[in-house]
Image (tube, rainbow, N blue to C red; front, top):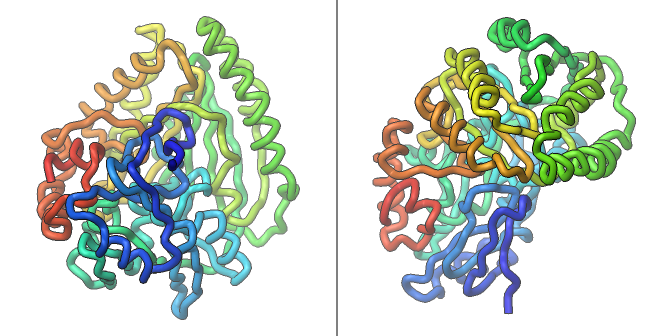
Length: 428
């Protein structure tokens, strides 16, 4: 009997009727061709998602063995769908290459991160899906199909949500390896948000953290440099195992059972960690962070021009309604792109991440964030917790209806449908 599947955050578990872990594309094609008619199928990667995107009511497929990485001429790399981002970063670094943008953590599979619109924070570099030069997938009938750079379906399939088929390989654009100087700049709240729009324009990479119940924010900005790295080799392990794994986890446990302590504990975290710092590291280390403690996440991408009023609105909501929040609010940024279901489709965006550990205020906090940010046109991150319906999706995503039509063409029997896709697109 197969074990139940569950996600990294332990917020979701389910029991697929059966599992499969094909060894290569040919085995995957045969699996789909021989699958019973009407049996639904979804793919699970690293399960580092808060949404139910990978939930399968029938067959659940793992692609761990499709993890090949092949460097190509012209700065391209072919990556198996099951390869993890940290594996890709290591392989590229050994070859003197790098991805120009990365999200915060690297445990995800490349295919999962691309398919859900995972992003970093830069107005000069799009999300991971924007790096896709081509892809291969197995369709509902077990046929291996390839979409090249000029294929009219590629803009829809880049952030494909697992709806077109089972991704097996992605071809991504890379750049020469580079180092970054990371500067941590603590600022008073008002100064931080007033300066934020110009900082985002001035620096290649910028993000902001704010601990609710404090009056200070931390701005991270990054500049390319040829200086030697200054980060000790073991610092990431210390951050992950000790700081996040022990200290921050303990603080979250205290605020869970004593919610009134959250403001005091946040001020303690701000006093200890929100300090001026500077370091130099390879880009793939500077742009990522140690795995955080288990928590809940909701994220909305709003028009860039609404960044400052949105941050003010979130702070006002927390303070007026007495919501006790024990995790940072994060603002990241991205340029407009052309992937139909990307949260940055057609507009430069601020990606506002609202996070919280287990707390009596968890549902109230996320309901308030969703209501206020959706009023600004906030589009949900597909890999985070989300409550949405097809009408709202079509209102927020200009090409969502056309995306649904393409999906029904690629998957006429609804083989890849699941509760997640039905909630976004409606019935198959």
